Picture 1 (cartoon, chains in turn brown, red):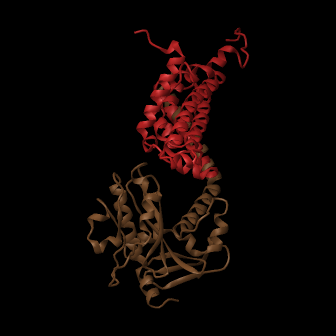
Picture 2 (cartoon, helix red, strand yellow; picture 1 turned 30 degrees about the vertical axis):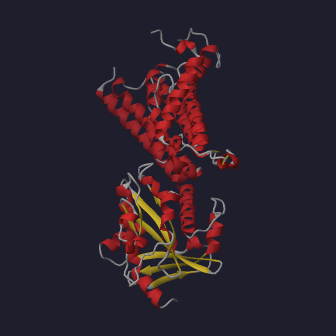
Picture 3 (cartoon, rainbow over the protein chains, first blue to last red; picture 1 turned 135 degrees about the vertical axis):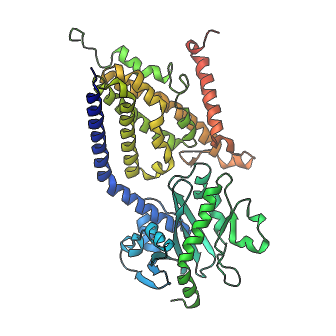
Length: 249
Length: 216
């Protein structure tokens, strides 16, 4: 009674209906999801700058209040665009796709990266968005540097699908709070980045410890990915950082 | 079929479909299905409740869909059909969560996707929806999802209370107790304690429900 033809027709029609339902819902819900993601991105930037009291409801308001400038820099450290007025999510910096820009960097092409400058109580903080590859998918985050462009003020990390309880721990306070006070340059001004050290910072030489944090037990690949991400992305910002340190605008 | 008398919507027989899975044939504590997600999402109450609601929606909807299709589904590909229906529902739920309760959807992360592999749902489709009319299938889905959800919420209640000292992220254990040297039990947050909690629930349930105890 169920011929092969029937089975094939049945399967084909079923799949087409399922595809239609799913693509319709994806298109209809996209605006809401994009909104949530933009809010999350703003929240991450504010959180890395250690701004407290950020809730989902007031994120946009606080973001517009504290982010005083959004700039886009190119591979040579030139400021391509500076955005100060208006809703900050309209700035070019906020719309930059880190993934494609970092891919260009990898291939040695020209690229542009965003920087957010937060000012609270007269203190300037520079926030550098990060992005890299974790174990199961992308990892990303923000690193906030003090006005000396050397000392870390705070970081946030997030991920697509790292292992819960292991790699996914990079988002927790226990991991991110280690970064505050670390420096990315050594005394001679050489770029050291922040290493995520398996076995713990205490296994590093004493003069290196200021450039390292403890990795996550059981989450070595994700931890390494975070270290690699910081080194790679901050490297892209280095020309700007060097220039800005010598001659602040 | 036409000679059969129409059954009232909430006849005792239909009500049994809802009541039984909550106690006598509970998917988690009696059939021991769906343990994976019961361990994974119960560290806090909120994700446990959202997970329960998500499973409820997926289970009821896919039970109805499969029940409606049951006479046309070619037996040889019935598992595939069931999977496609479940997967479609799960992706829909995931998309809706992402659009409207983004924070919670982040907490559930991969586990929403894992509803697809929740054996309770496949089990009900194969065992019940393939052979029953939509309305009983709907009730059966609701009943099993409730049975699953109740256990999830009980586990999450104890894990969050003892593991973090909070309920819905609100501190409930007074600071005074901590001053006396009380500490949160970190082990409660880890999956092994969820398994032990399930075990305790099974024990309590069997103590009060004698018909569940095997003869030997």
